[in-house]
Length: 353
Ligand code: SAM
Ligand code: SF4
Image (cartoon, rainbow, N blue to C red; front, top):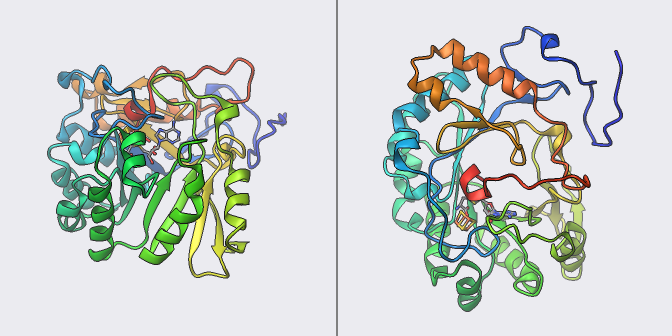
């Protein structure tokens, strides 16, 4: 077998043609990775307008007839867990709390066998009211996005005056017993990059697990610039000015965050260095957009239309085979550093972050 040097940690096997795919029911790819983590976007709508994600006026939302129905979503998730070895399902968007019927989708997915782990990524607006119902419907884990603790700044970053709602939502999730509640933060140079320490103190005190995410070229406006991005190194340097960070000895596995114990633990902080330290070699993800397009990667340039199969009467096995074939062709990495890198046509909010 020819082994290609890919320059990405963790990639083990050489590429081979489609005909070389072994007879394996799981979502394997040519590089030896196995996708077990399904990300489902429930809507591309959002009630915030984070500057690094969406323009102030919003986007051309997907036409409603193209959106998957609740039944179609549950069917695809069932095919994933029953036929393809999916172990975890994360619902996201857009803002998943805006999806009518969210709790019903969650309950149906939590009744599947084998039952997948169920998680949700949300901006936290409305969470204070809904946390109990979400837990009752089966949510095991929750990520809330929070980029600043200053109301005026929150308004600048998200273009909405809703900081208090988010903080109440986070507290409600903890009060419902969700543990950990993870907090996702994107730092923007000259905007909120002086808040790394303050956000970590807040999260440690509240029992939240904070993770900083490097800003990625996935904004609808295509305004991302590598030079402007706050890197993992910079974030860690800022934190080390106030805390002692030691590598968390817990097995990282396919988790994207590198984790550190803060001042000896038990509190931790994570950094997701998608750009400067890509973890593509350990990626275990497969993604469905709100309109039923399968993506093997956030940065994939192509999609596979499962909606047309669903609506055309395809059997579960036909859909599973199409899914397997698409994942087999998953690229080695996101290629952000390649000279020919092209940002995907869909922004993060439409793919599902
Ligand atoms: N609306 C929900 C939220 O904000 O949590 C879920 C969808 S949002 C696209 C998921 C995550 O992606 C959020 O934590 C958000 O901060 C992050 N995100 C959005 N655009 C990003 C970008 N260009 N680079 C890095 N992270 C981004
Ligand atoms: Fe909405 Fe999440 Fe994008 Fe912010 S990051 S605009 S909350 S989808």
